Image 1 (tube, one colour):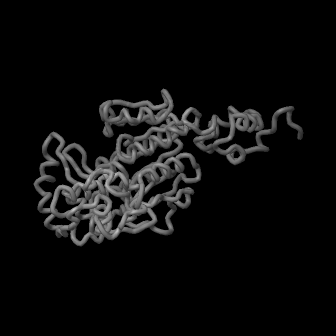
Image 2 (cartoon, helix red, strand yellow):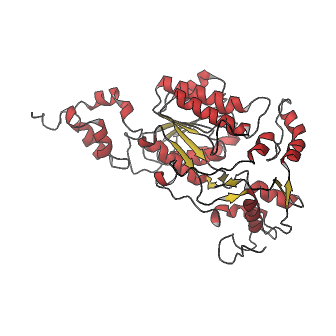
Image 3 (cartoon, one colour):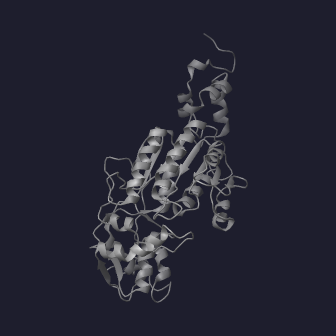
Length: 403
């Protein structure tokens, strides 16, 4: 059979072949040529859009003024991890819809992460409003959920944030036809975990998969970065207290990961259709105990009195009980120091290590950064003797054994 000039019968080139023929990053002419080769291309794309990658409409070189083909709704964009995810997805030319309950000051830094008009904020969002959720995701082909809590309050329990909202979000995404759902959980989350935080994370993961089987679950390890609530807390304690408090012997094992690497990984997951339905564990290459991390922090900040106070878990729970009681009853926010909640204390009895058989950074083509050196150089703000006193840990001139 002979096709009309300039066309090829539809059966001769499937949509899967088009994906392989025109990968992300190719010029617009290559995409147009492939579309013409399909003959009645518009009908094919309208009917079988779900089999195409979310980037099939890509135009340009991949920069912020390109068109990636992605319209992504990101929940939790104003959080620690959220700003890095928004930055990486938006700067490749994606349209971003960012629902939040924050005021303008809390989200203004997100506006400049994409080209003019590409970042759209939805004000007054509530995780309890199904109509608001549907409105936020109806125009998107990708949804990323990073909403989470490290402690419970009178308004938001772990169940409400980690289980109820993700399950309803997954159901709504399935209902309106969202193509990709990426749900961010936590490394070590199991339904039998002693910490309520990790238990509810695991229950939420199962609820998301039940409602949206093709969802990608991302489980990052402890996040390290300028805004983290781990090394910054250790550094602050070393500056304020005679000794840095640690729960029990500080033997809980972790594989901390640079937050920007996790942002890159989520961008790669969003743009790669083959990651759908999989679970990724994103962890650093080196294992540290909590004690190791405290000692590393003391080295970087050149602590004058680098002592550690090993406090039994039951004492920490006793000290935190009045504060936790108030958190669940007063109608206004309270400052909550890291370590003063039962869930955090319970979590210190477990290790958080990546399963070697589970996909991670390697499968995404990313080499996670080492903690020592530039990655944790932000801790120099706590340095005794001033910010410019000495060099960063792991760099020439820094003696890792002495302060």
